[in-house]
Length: 113
Ligand SMILES: Cc1cc2nc3c(=O)[nH]c(=O)nc-3n(C[C@H](O)[C@H](O)[C@H](O)COP(=O)(O)OP(=O)(O)OC[C@H]3O[C@@H](n4cnc5c(N)ncnc54)[C@H](O)[C@@H]3O)c2cc1C
Image (cartoon, rainbow, N blue to C red; front, side):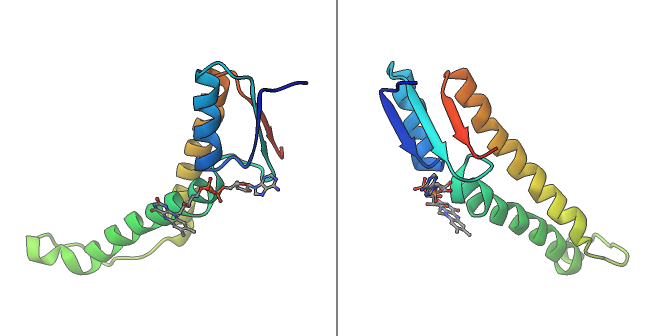
């Protein structure tokens, strides 16, 4: 196979560059060593950290923040398994979204599946 542009790494730098190059008419391939696209940001950085931060904030509010609003709750418990599953789903949805964008822009993805 021949390409006009081969990008190593499917993180935010790689996938945005690849999509833009394809939109400009280039035949592009992205080589990614991990199983999913999205790089540090989508897989282990920005997105999962903010998903967990969001959950943690709800937990902290339920523990300490709702009284001031006159909202009474019973015993508050942390279900870490559910919290982590929610985070994984968000990561999966967003990394899958990049696959969709690649297909939409007819990009070849060599992620390590
Ligand atoms: C915990 C955490 C939280 C963060 N939060 C934020 C935030 O809120 N906002 C923000 O703007 N930034 C945040 N960042 C930073 C953000 O993740 C990075 O700026 C961004 O991911 C950089 O993108 P990149 O494409 O340059 O590199 P990366 O995302 O690291 O992507 C590089 C990709 O290249 C692949 N790769 C590397 N070598 C090879 C090889 N030889 N062959 C094939 N593939 C290869 C890697 O597997 C990876 O997928 C956070 C980072 C961390 C760790």
